[in-house]
Length: 124
Image (cartoon, rainbow, N blue to C red; front, side, top):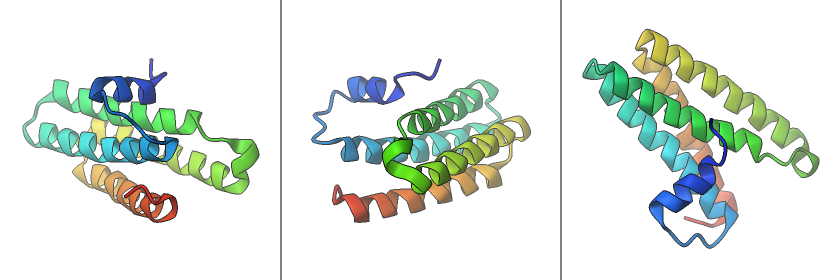
């Protein structure tokens, strides 16, 4: 269900991506954007949109897990896999309980990851 999310985002945006680093940046930004939409849906009591936007965020995070290179990434890849999995759990709880604080927690993690990614990959 969540396969090829990175490719789908690329195709939907029809952007020329210079590098895989830029794609990761876009995925992190997507999680932040979709989380903001999920929060709005919760505030508006719109169940359908809440589910839709949370599922979109989860799909991106699932894709991020699937592209981790555990052979080259070693401990960092294992750490990120655990972190991403935890963020998926938080989003699932947030969706079930209409918990804005959990969405904020996930967004704060992805803001930090995005900043760190931009610093280390020079894609900003």
